[in-house]
Length: 127
Image (cartoon, rainbow, N blue to C red; front, side, top):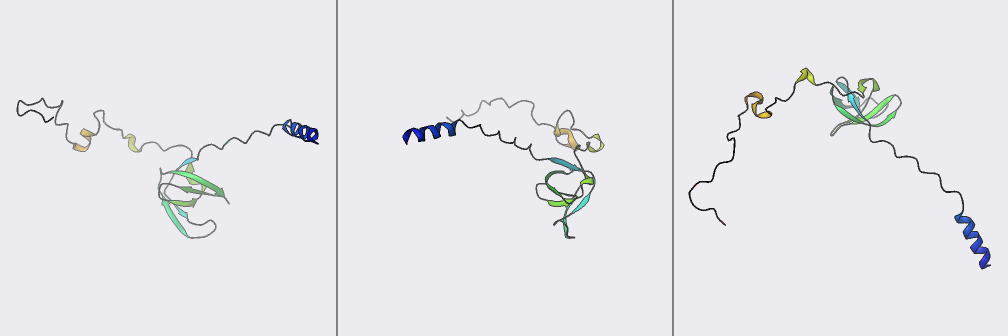
């Protein structure tokens, strides 16, 4: 009996290895809204949802019945796939940050000091 148990255990361990698991799906799909568009809250119902603006980056949750369920940080809704694109929108008007940084942007103040102040000859620094 013991020999028979050992033989069955050995044969069970010699079976074909399990098929490898399916690869994990790629990360979430990010698309961009191409025009201002309303959404609906529930698929197949006429209940107004969030308004998405042109240029919004949205994450696709699911596709069903010819609609796409998307969300941003604080908005969810079902939209038509025709208002979504995989291509990020170009910057509006080609605006870029000035070479000097934000300090000169829109009349901002320039830095007050070019370097840290030198120690004064007054009272010694506390220890």
